[in-house]
Length: 522
Image 1 (cartoon, rainbow, N blue to C red):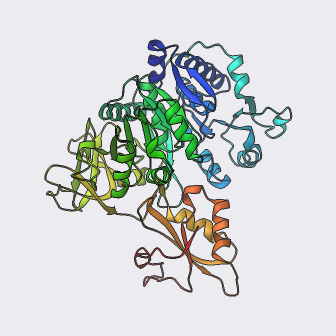
Image 2 (image 1 turned 180 degrees about the vertical axis):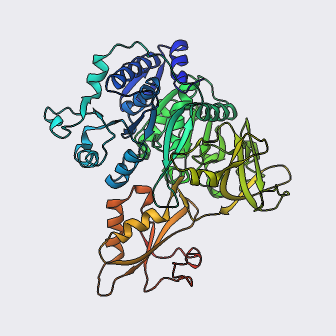
Image 3 (image 1 turned 90 degrees about the horizontal axis):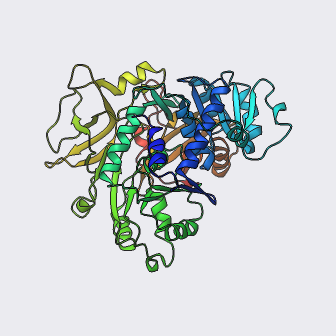
């Protein structure tokens, strides 16, 4: 099965059923399938061929959803890019995987014009939103078209499927230790397998109504669309959780049955007045990932949504999901992230690659068809995490996370082997933030670490040494970060210091810095 078959099979079975509710629009499965077919033909006509990468640089929207399936139907590979990504990183991603076509919003014209001057692989641009007659002046060497015109210019006949399930479906960029993001390559088989396993343990059916406020560039948000269409359910797609009362009203109005969240969302949600007075009888399940829920949150969520099962989960982009804690185990094991999901094996190894006994700490290894193909054109980085498995022909994923397992097979997170920070479910490279800080005139040295945070899992803290005679406040530096980094990469804490500890070789030593989290709050 291919990923686009999720939509196609549901369109056959439920053609007139509302599949997507977004910004006032209500689209049926047949409408979405037809529009995705038209977009696929438009992409093919613009020169997109089998295996080409097509980037989606949009906020959560109808156009973003149509783009995902239109790209798949064109036998191409979709790359969803966070809409807050700044120009240098955007240019890097476009060039790194040699994006052939870009689907973005007309509100991003100024940014895109500058970026595309540095991205020669991009041959065509499709703009969603307001249409401007002078737009071609921005891209004299690109084929430019408008989303709505593309949908109105091509037939809704499907293109012939050329892919098989081993072919690449998507590249999801995640932070790397070098400071540049790494492209996680996911095949149709990887993504179909992950979707099958997750919908199995969540017991999803076509009656489910899933409310998604998470960005589609975050795989947790992306999979809500994929899984919702797989089961023939309905997805309520919002841009964000910016207006929590609006989200609560939607939950009630649309009779939402499934709500995926992260600790930051639940922290805001549980502070809303009169929430317990509302009737959430339709809500069947709540899921959490990114960071473990504080025990106090678990209690409040269950009190507020008494009929909803709460699933605590753990995963990483390289395999989508690793484990889930069955709701009935929450009281006994609130600090556990559960066991491996269906059709997957997880185990813990020591530094020699040998499996450890229950209670011993070691690196978590994941074995299954959900494990990525590797990092795009990074064979050395890939070899560090995909290593020989129990069988001669296979490779398994070494997560880089330290765990212990109890006698019954339940997993408990201990810490990370490397210095990558996992904040709000996103992998953040300290090096990437440090690079931005060093670009600020007056910064002499910078060190970025992750510090424990009950809500975020890890919060980002930056230590900065200024050049002699330079006057910069902590707020000045934080404002610079906000201007040059995605939202989730902006440090929560920042501290100006006179010196940073060094190793004998002169490298900044971060070990001593990780234990502190005082400092200015961004």
